[in-house]
Image 1 (tube, rainbow, N blue to C red):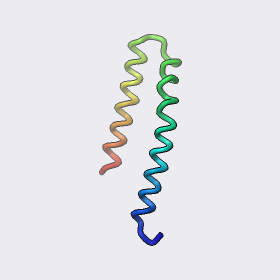
Image 2: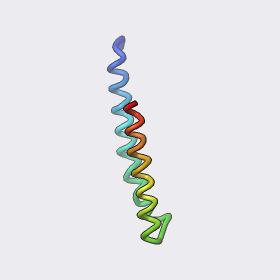
Image 3: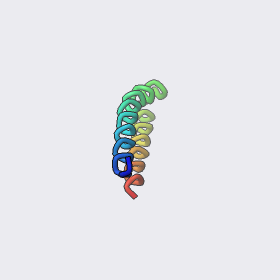
Length: 60
């Protein structure tokens, strides 16, 4: 693998598989941690904000 492109491509694929497996676990966990609907909505909003910020920063 002399071409670094393939290393990055494989790494991103593994990252996608990990994220796809972790995200469905987080949603019910937040629902179990908080009982008040406002707290659940706020926590899910923070998770989505952090997720989006991570995607934006990864493009820099």
